[in-house]
Length: 177
Image 1 (cartoon, one colour):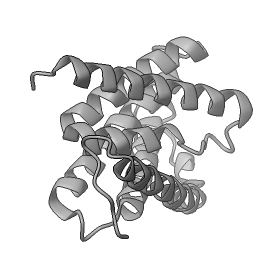
Image 2: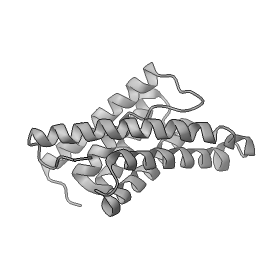
Image 3: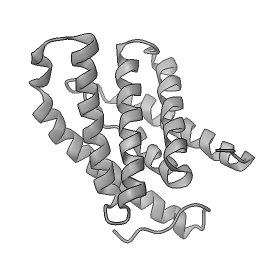
């Protein structure tokens, strides 16, 4: 994928916005049992719309690295969870977008991404950090929260995509659902 200068600029802006949302979330909203709202995933959806799967993964990786630098968690357990869940969920959302959009709305694609993010993180916690069956106890609660935040983030992303399409921003088309 050869990127034009305007695409590099857009990717850098989306990465910056994702890092800002990630940092605000870290500073303002303490994690509930290791759970965060995932506001930066709104930006991931925008990146998937503009650049496809590869571009979405690049923005996600850059967000995780820069977010880890800003929050002081780079290369620690939180970074491992962030990058594994982020790349995995971005991959699934990108493939869902490619194969099932518009049959699946961005809200549903976002829910799928949020659920996959939680499943990957719990798997990494179990396999790498805490090899104890007890890590799965909070999984039902986390899946409910992931569904709620996935719906919210998908709705926000849909509103942004429609607003950007109405403004005539290249790469965005209005979504009816």
